[in-house]
Length: 177
Image (cartoon, rainbow, N blue to C red; front, side, top):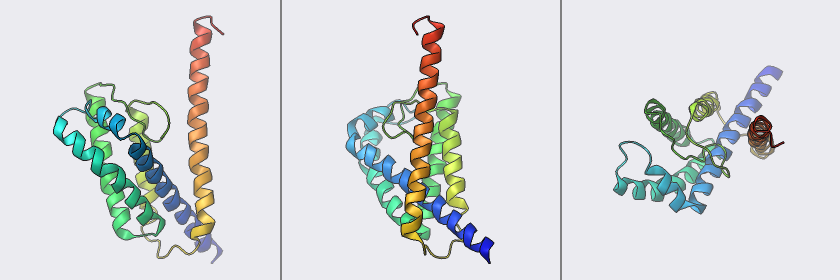
């Protein structure tokens, strides 16, 4: 019985972690809607008129999906998986064309271009949502949100430290540091 409880807790943490990612992503796009729209212009096959629609619809949709994920709603899990599949598809197109498309994906507050890391992160996030499929209820909602928040913040901090390490390494190669 103890194993079932721990697996359920892991499922709840995965679901809350995904919800937090969608919440931060949507909120960041809402706060920088024009910058988000301008980034969409770099995506191949994206007509200019569609960038306006996506910039107005996607950010609030991500916030709504985040709320649904926090509530363990099946529709939110399905919507999140569809959105992640679409994001993966766009990332694959960008990578195949070897383009530099600005993306705040999974970093929320930093500059980043779509890359293999973007694809990997989307797949991992989809897997985190996938393991919550059989989650029947979200009994420990308030207990799992802080843990999920810690995991997301830890990931963001690790990404930032990795970027700093790359920056310092590049500076040392140039003889600056």
